[in-house]
Image 1 (cartoon, rainbow, N blue to C red):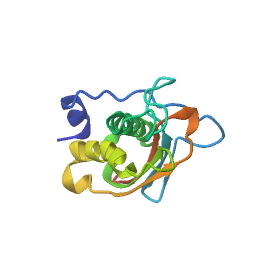
Image 2 (cartoon, helix red, strand yellow; image 1 turned 90 degrees about the vertical axis):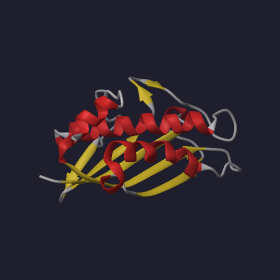
Image 3 (cartoon, rainbow, N blue to C red; image 1 turned 90 degrees about the horizontal axis):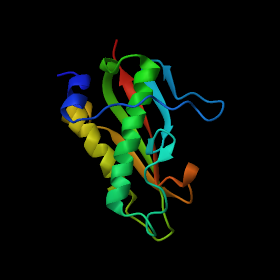
Length: 154
């Protein structure tokens, strides 16, 4: 099954990717790898999940934010490489969680994006390395931001 069919089955519509806010690229392809810049959980210009984990944002809301940010990353990937069928494997997921000093469940937040990767790509193509870290602040007060690195086929 191809990725477009899987997205349709899951009821996911990829949005238009957001233009970079400064002098950087949404995605860069080099030597068979696609590096996608950080994505926020947004719908258009509206941040869907904002605030700090450990204070005003629940883990469940942040997981949904990580899922939304991954959908945006896939849209950016589509626009960078032209066709999602070029994806060979998701290699790496980096998740940044806007959290208080005493919050220590960043990995649980990142699970929202990892779970969707496995739903879309299965256990082999979707098996990825991952880092999840807590940060003091994110752009637009987003609760989560993520980026991905993807191996491309021809």
